[in-house]
Every structure is written in structure tokens, then in C-alpha cells.
Length: 129
Image (tube, rainbow, N blue to C red; front, side, top):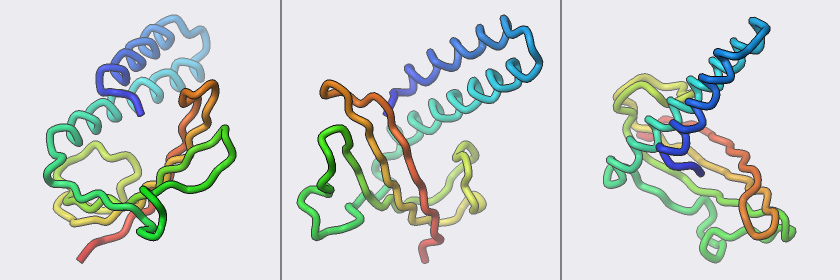
């Protein structure tokens, strides 16, 4: 996962690409990517500032350190996060501000030469009573 600063740097790159785009569809796509990275930066900052308000736990407590056996070019992370939605900025959030939610997070990391080359994230949202 990138840091807030890295997301902002990437958003700035998309801003410049948008300015140089020759087709409206290109400009629209770069604007979408720019906004998405700015929201991700805000989310990273919120998480860093509110760690004490979030409860993270492994999705399968029978796994050793939440590890899932995978081929050498993949790594998975599977966990639950429980928190109150306190503001806008969570893309795809199906609940209003003030709702206590339990969200399952599954990350599929593609590994190349010992480094994360690609990350695919999945979210499953539930209301937590």
C-alpha cells in the first residue's frame, strides 16, 4: 500500500497527464485517476490519525499469523476491520456517516523479485451491531 504522500505524488502525475491529454475521454480518465488517488491519500491520513478507533483482526484465527499458503509469486492478507464511519472519503462505502461497520479486507499481492508489483484489494462491508 502507498503512503498518503505517494498517493498525492501520483495524483499530481495524473493532473499533468490530464492537462496534456488530447482527447476528452483521456482527460476524463486522468481526472478520475487523479481524484481516486487524492481520496486514497485522505483515507491513509485518516487511518494513520485514527488507528486507536479501528479494530483489526485476522479473518481466520486458525491461520498462522493470517498467512495463507500461496505460490511464490503471490501473497494474501485477509482481515476484518471494525470502525465507525466518521466522514466522507471511503470509496464504495454503502453506509451513511455514523454507522458502525465491519469490513472484510482481502489483499492479493503479486510478488516480483521479492517486491510487491501489484495489489488487488477486495472489500466486503457489513453493518456491525
